[in-house]
Image (cartoon, rainbow, N blue to C red; front, side, top):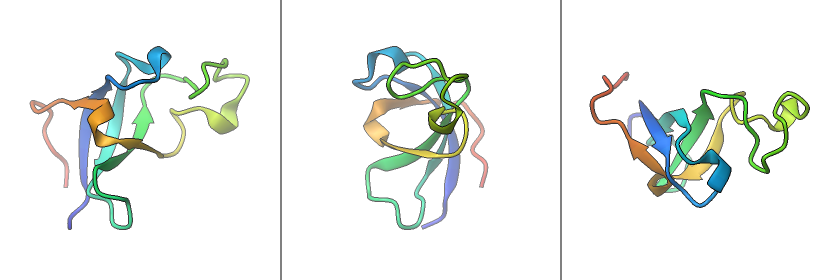
Length: 81
């Protein structure tokens, strides 16, 4: 399985994340099937707190596991191997 990079827009159940774009790592070795690792473009946290006040939990730093179905993957984005 070769890891791939994609871009997607969040469409999942966490309301304040809806419409936010993220860089996605798909087919990551050791990651459960149907899941991606995401890094959001904007400073935002999973609980809606001010990301600048909670840098450790900001979703635009590091990689965070989400269900792949939570994202509308941009098929026009050029895939990077």
